[in-house]
Amino acid sequence: MHLYIKSYDLWNKIICKHRNYFESNIIDNIFKMLDFICLILNNDPHYICHGDFHPENILMNNHEIIICDWQRINIGKSISEIFFFISKALDFGINIIENEIIEYYCQKLSEYKMENVDKLKIQKEKNASILYITFIHWPYFLQNSNIERINIHYNNMDQAYNNLINNL
Image (cartoon, rainbow, N blue to C red; front, side, top):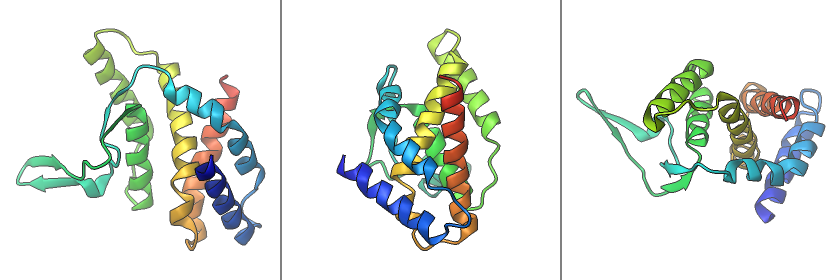
């Protein structure tokens, strides 16, 4: 719980510093929903996850792709890995078409499991992942950032919150 409170305080500090640009009620609402968000993310199935999958951890050796930095390997939601990758890419200024990645992920997961993946469940898990990762991870890195950088992550969180609430 201490991590939740620290993240909540850091987000409020960011919002207070830029109060003309961001509303604090989204942070309050997400903070109140964290237990529900964790319930979604703790439901089966779970997979082996890298734990820190982002563009800087992908290396190229000629035409061979090498994934490095495996210290945070864990069991979790692979959709969380995908969103973390997307959020880091966006933060680096890499344009990612999220819907195409999610569609491809659902297609490949369906092939792997040899059954159709419930896309609504994946969307719900994706939104929960966005909320958890953005709420917990990003305020530490956004403290002295410009409005544009903060806006990327704040808007992702706001959209995911509305998507999750509207599709319960």
